[in-house]
Image 1 (cartoon, rainbow, N blue to C red):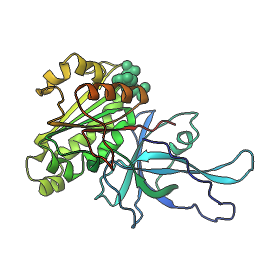
Image 2: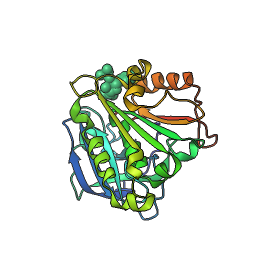
Image 3: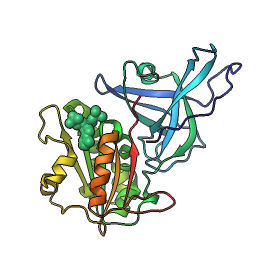
Length: 280
Ligand code: A2P
């Protein structure tokens, strides 16, 4: 997702955090990954797949003043949820995540209520099958989109691929998919059997698991398509959203272009969209 620099905010005399929101829940998935939920400002409307700037106050070394330290985070919760969920990496010397990983329920974080982003249904033309391609914490925007009824209303088939180094890093996504398959509210909204549209294709690259390899290599060899029982992507039928590390985004973008898909935007919907996963 795009890193947006925030204009400096005058905070020296501010008694409380600007745009503060209370943390309600924190879950540590591995020593490198955690998710957390915060209260949702009543006025915050967003489209599933968008991101916001969140962070903590930090002291500027030069001036000694407190100022917000913010980063772009995809909202992982769907737009109908009363809370907001985020999924984050922990970087031990990362300016923000070295501190953010220690938050607890009851703590406050800063949340700028201005959602933006390109991983939204509006940026794609209608199609039959949608592919969500994620690596690592790039799963976050799809955690939102996979819980959005529109995803199942708009497409006959929804395929989420998630490539991580190790098995433990798949756990957040695996549990989410399991919960969606049993979600009574989504079943009621979309209709019984909606979960049959959902295909989950997790792969690991550095630890043994039932499906090993980078998704890009598995597509190039045709193995992913054979496993899923679908033909390679075609612009007439397939749409794609991509969120992962930079090298992955560039590689898969080139592959999608090779299949004949074109990159879309909010102002010009086409066949695929890409956003960079957050890295501190
Ligand atoms: P690999 O272990 O082969 O580098 P990271 O944790 O570094 O962000 O990586 C997340 C996952 O994305 C890893 O499984 C990694 O595989 C994979 N990956 C990294 N670069 C690419 C790429 N260019 N194409 C496909 N997958 C990639």
